[in-house]
Length: 152
Image 1 (cartoon, rainbow, N blue to C red):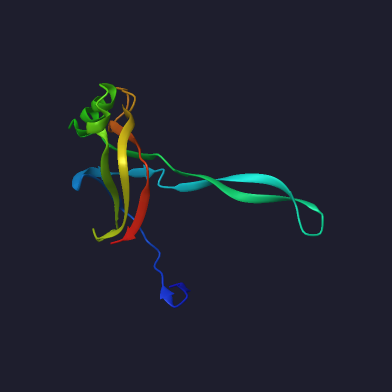
Image 2: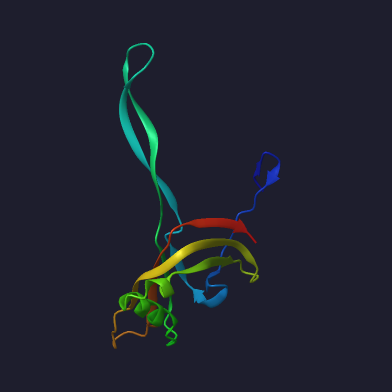
């Protein structure tokens, strides 16, 4: 196991993810993407103390990624109903707090990402094709205003 400053780190093997909205599980997902933060980089031309012109890089606007979750379509209407709140202009009701929880192969939660003030900016089901045996899928994109990570 790698060690950083005396702290042992484990390589996490994740087998599934759950989405919790307002501390209630809304299901398990096969893929989750967009758990991220980034900062814009602003480049400015400055003159250093030796009179040389250099490019100085400073931090700009901080941003969080949009979370996209995909699962086998179960027929429940949680995500569709949540998305409908946005479509109907009920943004106050649509904004919720939630978490993505990652589980290992022994079904133990290992890491959790909490997000705030979230609302669904997109909801879709997979293309319908009677010539395939693939399960229909449902995808939701969650826009939010901040994310934190904690080990469980």
